Length: 323
Image (cartoon, rainbow, N blue to C red; front, side, top):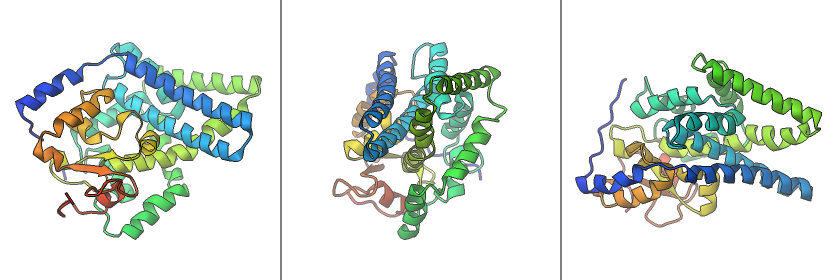
């Protein structure tokens, strides 16, 4: 069934306050990208120098979180918000963000544009189709079953084969990928793998890149994407996405680069990620926005009167939220 959400309406005063926040710059994302790569190399270096298994486990969690950060920076580039220059916006994203996690920038953009245009449209929204496949398109009736299917099984990586198959079909063999991207990605990985063999760091490439790529990144990505819209299939723009707040470490791991302001992003996609927090504060002047889905904590709420992400997913939209 084709669906068009009822648009959110805000006062002229609020929209006037939001307009300056749509201005983009380059320096925020230069530092963001450098920070992510620094965390990756720093985590690997610390693990190598200590030789401690627990430090290694921590390192692949941190590296997996930065791979999710790459997802979010690629999302910024998709909205032409990473860099103001169109060429740099695409190719810096391709080389330093998308290709390392085996994602096609163009394929991602095509899918994401459809997601914004057709949010919760069962026929035309790619994300709705994915939610439906894993059973997250509707509020979960049984919280114990939800925990088993979407927390425990995800921790045990049961979902990874299906995710990998989807990634391969969408990003490696898609007809949407321009040949320039295809050849650049293939050459990049061929050079990297050949160099790792020639200079004998292939083992580090495996344990510090491919292992987190197939494990911690997949867990973090699943839960982060689940937090964005799961269980919110309805007919109004204000109630079709959620914002997620919580402890700084959970935001760092699951929602890098202000990804937790997902409702704000869907309402005003032209606002770059570094201004979403300010936009949220302005939007809180609106009564209907204040009553939207604002969760605190992922598994358990960190503030009385607010739902955690898990409880929000398991609560029907028709049920009155705690105030």
